[in-house]
Length: 142
Image: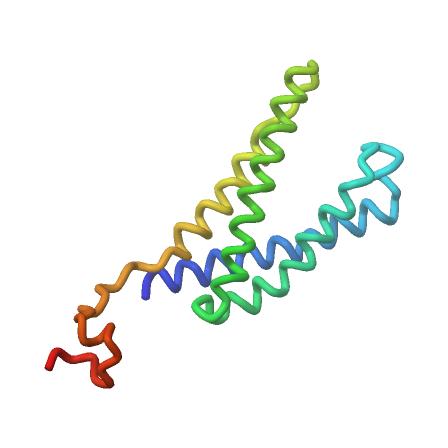
């Protein structure tokens, strides 16, 4: 039960963080800073992806066991995103452009923590007997 509660908190906080990204998106769009200052036309689309995922994570936080696939998706997309950012950071350094690794580590940790909390403890499986495999209605050895 403790793992379920920790997962609720982690998913809820991540959902709130993702929804809160609406403010930076608003600022970028209103001032066209994504185009005029940063020269990065992908940032608003990138932020909108996380903003759209946020409310679904907030709903999933209420009962994570019912939304395991959504949480797994959020974790996997964080890990994939972190992997792509790692490659971009290494390439930036190779071309003499300084890029910090902090966001790479944070996004990677988000994915790893979600996957670790999502992992269900294995329950001991029931003993399967040959008669259970043969189609006996009770599954018991006769």
